[in-house]
Length: 149
Length: 452
Image 1 (cartoon, rainbow over the protein chains, first blue to last red):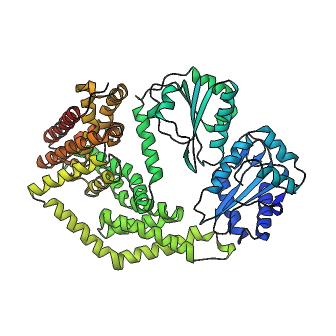
Image 2 (cartoon, rainbow over the protein chains, first blue to last red):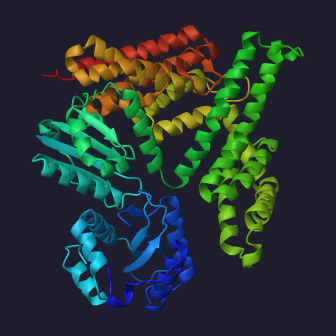
Image 3 (tube, each protein chain N blue to C red):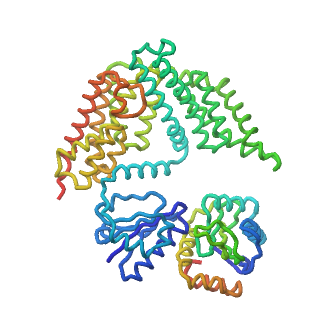
């Protein structure tokens, strides 16, 4: 799973959940991670429909598995309080967007999501996510957090 | 203090692990020992061993999906949703330590869990077929029972207009008439989702018109389902017209294709196969019939509700024709009732060969067996497969053979003892069931080792 500075947006200006997802997908396409934005977004939204990916504590982990994804990737964005139909009723300000190709038979991304989910339960981890000042700093923090990145 | 837990959320990606983390943290803060089994998309991790369960003081189940619970018999257990586990973890742990003991007399729950787990695991063509069959069954049951009720007034009673008997036959016949379209429709629905429903049902109606029966409905359902998939894949409309795809384009084209294919090409052959099969079954000689009964019995007991059992069952329902009894259906039901009944009998006669939990389960198994829910035998088979499965197969085989020998017939597809009024030659039928149950009980009783 790769995340890089170009896939991190510490100050994404978005007006809604869909707007945020569209913007992030566009970045993913620009970076060559996704070959068909529309198809990828559809996959992400479909998953979102089944069960909101807002896991509480202001965090959302939308993800899409689709042929439109070239290679597994991982994006991070901070936004100003968006409504995401979260389980705890709170708005979301941290987004981890994940993309996985259809043919990816491995469960590496699932393992990373699992580790990430565990880390998200810890206040210090969440605080660091909110306090990071540069994309590089955020990446370094994630790499040091034993997520398997 | 030792706390163990199982977490499982429906999508298995995040909440499963978050709940595990929450439980682990809360327990450690109180100074308790803790182990959490997670059941997520990656599979089962940190599985609880028998030793873990034995040494635990309390168990927390934080699951929104069903999870095997038999292993927790006799332990304090509290079961909540994953969300709840995340919100009030501290209180949850204390609640668990004071909870009631979980008893495996919840056999009916376990069987329910197992059935839904099984239905989630089915794949491919078998899954589509089972989807169709499961929607079809209520129609067949309602129709069959109403028709049988009409017969209570006499076999020709329904021919007198405006009598209760006539109405019962009409309603039952109406339900029966829907059976094949529903089967075809929901097979197609399973394959192609909502757009498949209409073409599937329409195809099923055509199959009836062609006298292609149950088999015709099957063919129509799969044909419709895959036709719709093809249409969805290859017919691309501009965005503005997308809306008419499911409402107009797909139903019309798919129904046309399926209907015409059935009329011109497939209908004749399938109808011929159907007639041949029915003739074969009705004209089967004595010994062949008994042999068939024996095989049916073996199949029904072999996997108790699994694919082999369902194949025999589907075969049985396929031989049902409105208003008349089928010897095959009778054998299928009798053979399916015997495994739980025989095992229940065994738990009473051979007490020392069964654990406390199994003896409790035996009580429930009487009811399950009487209701033709073969899955009631599963917990016993799971605990001791090499001894239990051959025993139930032998018992069911005997029952199936005897049922055919006594020429018992059944005109409805389900219901166990509640539909005994729909059985022809009921005395022979009861003897068949009793004989099989006794044989099963005896075999199980003598082969099994005593429990310490």
